[in-house]
Amino acid sequence: MLGFVQRLLSGSRSARCCGGLLGALGLALLLVAAPAPASEEDEMMGFLVDDSISHIGHEFYRYFSDRMRDTSRLDFNLVIRERPDARWGSLIIVEYEQRVVYRRFLPPNTSELRAIASEAADLVKQQIVRRKLEAQLQDNTDLEKDEL
Image 1 (cartoon, rainbow, N blue to C red):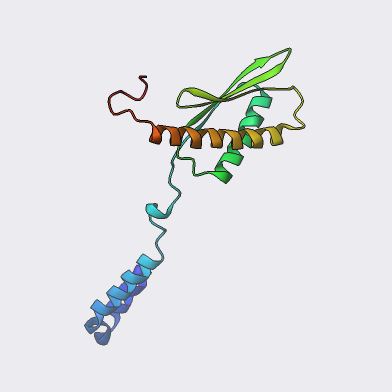
Image 2: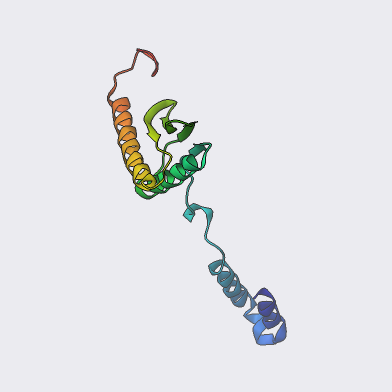
């Protein structure tokens, strides 16, 4: 595109006199065709950390994270941990600010895993909203946040 504008400018006398106008037009066309600025891209807000071990844990994380991304802004960090057990299945623990907000044993079968993960995501979201509200309403002018 720029080469075309340069050839036009060097081609004729009338083009040389209007060179500034054509150059500005070429520059405007290049700016319009440029990719979107970074401010219009998705902004990374929070993290969902997968600390699972087994296939069931990874599948739970996948369904859980899909539901969380669909229903919230993700302006917080969560850690999804798993402790597999041969007898009981897998213990899934979801932590928010280093505190447990969800804990459940998952059976070895995965038929209801999507529904369980969606329900867990909704419960965790409610817990986070409740904790944020309690933190705003708490009067802690004299103490640090973790002191009582």
